[in-house]
Image 1 (tube, helix red, strand yellow):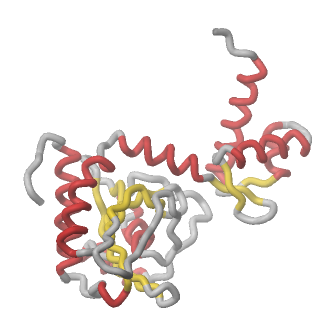
Image 2 (cartoon, rainbow, N blue to C red):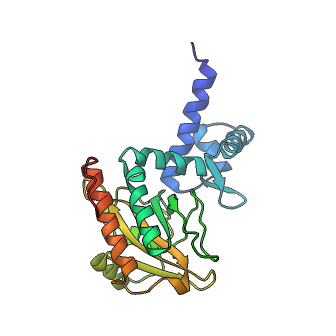
Length: 247
């Protein structure tokens, strides 16, 4: 089937805008029009359509950033490494043994995005988190990605919000492999550790997220030890998918 030249031009322009976005973190109507060499009304139609299809989302009234669909596509690309499938049994084991919700997150360029969840519902009060949720700069997962940013599988886009920790705290995360963060506003705590791919790069974070009173705050707690062992198991199985040994 022959593809109309107009359709090809639309695809090319969408790619132009996505590349502009990747280079600048956000785009607006003026920058989009200049990039495409078109009027503002035409640029607005492109931006609106890309927003409607999940390629973009509004950061504020005038600026757009990467949308949910792109995060999903990035997660699908990462799944080729096998981390999502291989993490499932490990997450289930940790969740059942420790009675906590376990979350696997990936990096979308500026923040962690929840890619897989094993929710614990053994308690009446428990934490729920949706796949696709973007985590803020104070999340334990954000701290882990920042601590190991020089060893990351991902690129950190310009304008990435910095985490609210000192270099000494990041060094401690690198030493222990564990980040712990408590959100007084939400009453939720998280403990996170990096998951490495076959090449040693950090491809994801494995975390326990639960009501703060149930989450220990020590880097050598049973939760921390379970996460560290689970991350090693996932990494080992990524390198050798036939390895079904226990963590």
